[in-house]
Length: 475
Ligand code: NDP
Image (tube, rainbow, N blue to C red; front, side, top):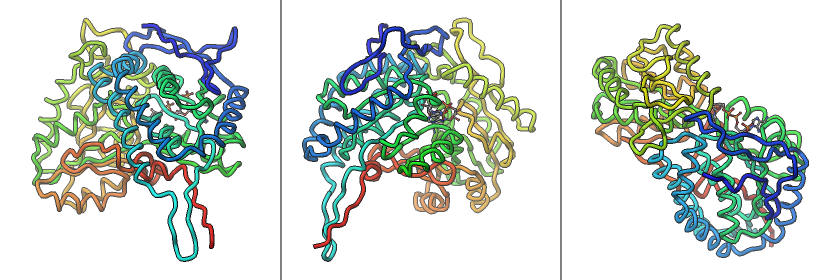
């Protein structure tokens, strides 16, 4: 496949200088370099910020309906180009093609449609006593995104920002930048005015830091690791920028004694292994009543054995490689540490998966541990690979205590045939999202975390408000 959009996108121009340093983009299934993208630096960020500042005056003056109509066109084009997006995500991330079509390329269409719908329903002017309260765009937004959902993560930042009337400087992850650049091209084709969206490729230490420190950027929205999130917040404080952080998680999946155990365990395993376990809200801790533990282990091991790592381009593949050699090393180290800490391995392990046809890429075995100590690294650290920890609990209070025994608070789940009981337990978990009995991801609902999972929200009305400020005008 030839990737045409590999340059920086600044002020509506695709720019690449002669001899500019390049970043290789690998196919993680094979390790083969499939494209290179231009590597930017502070100079590119300066130009992108200047373009965004200039475009802001005009873009923020567009009517709400004008902006919503443009987003409708973006959603239509994303839908038309779904196959091209899916193929690109499969190539740069290693996501199985069926998942790439059904999730990576499909979800952004819903994200954009929901944002347009929400925008139309919002009131930008309200009255309180003798004041008129106006909602105004904060200005230029810096967006820094990771590789794990390379289109959705970008869309859930830049689309609400643009909807709010802001302009954007985006730095996609250097590991998976191709689909983000394709998205920028699609937004250009949809008629987005020059300078409203600018994309600078490059690594975090050059381009990421230049965005966070830039005095011409008013707000930063970051998704990625806890440690980088902390560095971003610290650096942003020097210019007093507004910051949104969507960081990692170690989400608990509480299976109550009255739940349909087989369904709860199977769906729980599938959730944990989705996207090769590279989801910030993955349900990586499965909490099961002690008396149901052995049955749950049996179901989990049998379910895991059906996740055979394979070539992501193959329609039958359910689980592909990890994104990079580094990510594979991190996951193998975490599995080895789990073994040393005394957890019981019931599926997978640290060795490379078997399979003669398996390409030479960054594969690990989908792995399940049980009898995991809730205080151990396995239960506390974000692994970002297909590694599930099963933990036994005594009663509901114990389950809630284990769920909350985490410095993270992003996702969560509760299973019970009594929905009211499940919802009551959900309220006691200190976390941003809870799915009851497999409740589906909702792109109209606010998404974000508490504790070390970050602050601020993406998607829904809250996702747009993240990029607005309130002005009170007294009459
Ligand atoms: P990072 O947090 O390092 O990277 C996320 C984004 O931030 C990338 O675009 C990166 O650039 C950029 N970045 C890196 N350093 C800085 C900086 N100092 N200032 C501004 N931007 C910066 O995540 P990794 O990709 O290294 O993944 C490591 C771990 O992070 C994973 O194993 C996982 O645990 C977690 N993670 C969590 C995610 C989530 O959704 N919450 C998503 C991805 C990872 P670049 O990489 O291009 O240099």
